[in-house]
Amino acid sequence: MNKYLNFINGEWREASSGESVPVTNPATGEVIGMVVQSTQEDVDAAVQSAKLAQKSWRLVPAPKRAEILYKVAYLLQERKEELSQTLTQEMGKVISEARGEVQEAIDMAYYMAGEGRRLFGDTVPSELQNKFAMSVRVPIGIAGLITPWNFPIAIASWKSLPALVSGNAVVWKPATETPAVAQGFVKIYEDAGLPKGLVNLVNGSGSVVGNAMVEHPDIDLISFTGSNEVGKQINERAGALLKRTSLEMGGKNAVTVLEDADLDLAVDGILWGAFGTSGQRCTASSRIIVHEKVKAELERKLVERIGELKLGNGLDETVNVGPVINRSSLERIDEYVKIGQAEGAKLLVGGRIATENGLNQGNFYAPTIFTDVTPDMRIAKEEIFGPVLSIIEVKSLEEAIEVNNSVEFGLSSAIFTADVNRAFQAMNDLDTGIVYVNAGTTGAEIHLPFGGTKGTGNGHRDSGVAALDVYTEWKSIYVDYSGKLQRAQIDNN
Ligand code: NAP
Ligand code: MG
Image 1 (cartoon, rainbow, N blue to C red):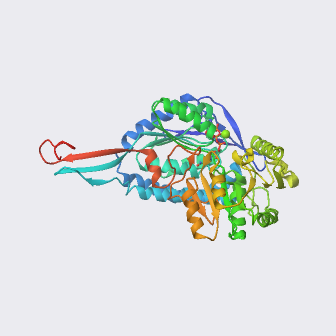
Image 2 (cartoon, rainbow, N blue to C red):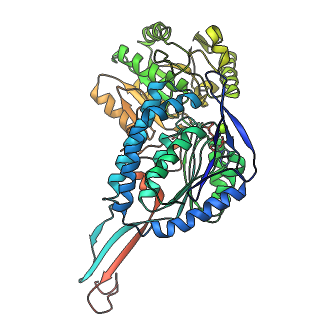
Image 3 (cartoon, rainbow, N blue to C red):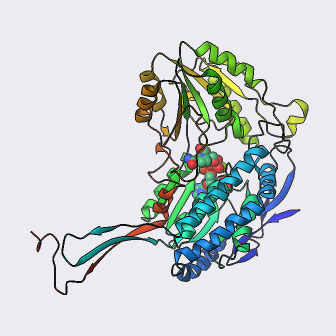
């Protein structure tokens, strides 16, 4: 039986509690291993090792730090298939998507390794003669990373790589559901020769380990991705300690389909966005906002194509839709379908737990579409995090934008139209951190900022160069070489 341990100060260790819990394959119900359950004591040990390691790491020139990140990229590439198989087994997403996710970590490793020779600040003219002014990025110290199960390696790469290249140490708590991929990733940091203590892995529950990290006085920042409920709690507790938090939370993403859209293309984008990863992406398409003139045709095409999606174990290359993460998630999704029916939405297809052909061994939900949904219904407002899509009819672009923006989240949005003027109008008015034109709501690339407005985030961004703002402080430096006292704002006026 596999046992997923902690990695603290360069050693693989048991948790101080001596306890562990099972990790289950969501497609088959099989237990694939046991993960240790850490306590405050383990978090303390991780922080201590991080603190010591960071003291010398911050002095290593960033291009030298980056050389290790290049090795991380090579090793990720070498182990891509192995990591992808592990990912599918513990998390459920189909193997092609798992490979895509590992590729995202590879891309991020190359990108952040490149940052080692940039980490740009500014040099600007001083307002005084014989004075030089510049800004530089400096590391913050120890970054506490708390990550969800739905993108167990991609999100961890978005956070740990920029943290490390900019000179921080890391204490990482992965989701309880996905310790195997976490172990595989940390093993790569170890094998790449990252000095001990710079990446520490502490497995355990959010309420114990996550909480201990948030409250720990020596963890300088928390970068969290997960639910709004937990993000809000973290923000409150960290706020009281004046600790920086970067929060990436839920979404209720919509695809707008105008009457001039290429409907077949829209259907491709919608099916991929809504049912890829079984709808368990923060950027999943969960609402379709469609012009009344093309609603019936779009529905007909969607229902036809949804029948072609094959449910099953994601290791089977012919499967399109894998399981959802666990039993309670399956039940929550089913509960939302009942809520939708009670609210008067019309079920077009799906709406049931799938149990045929052995699917009952795992947690499978049939891809589901509701139509005649109105924006005030709960299924149109709340994040379901499963393969459930709601169709809302509108009469104009203006109404579509209003509906798109009416939810509390602001992660991603998409519009299908052939009209360049209306596309630009939408780019301007859609209130989300990510906008797609003639593509679905998923498919972010790692060199652009990733994150959302309103209830989705707190203004920070993962990924892209913007991620460096989470893991660095700005230091402004003035060098006066005039040899005399020069007072800004006074002596030059
Ligand atoms: P979650 O329940 O909030 O868990 C996320 C992480 O926080 C897990 O590691 C969890 O640990 C930990 N945690 C739980 N309670 C905690 C606490 N009191 N203090 C500190 N940490 C705590 O979210 P999830 O169900 O795993 O993931 C789904 C959610 O993530 C969805 O809302 C989705 O939209 C969001 N998401 C957002 C993005 C984005 O970039 N915007 C990307 C992906 C996912 P344990 O679960 O191990 O106990
Ligand atoms: Mg959870």
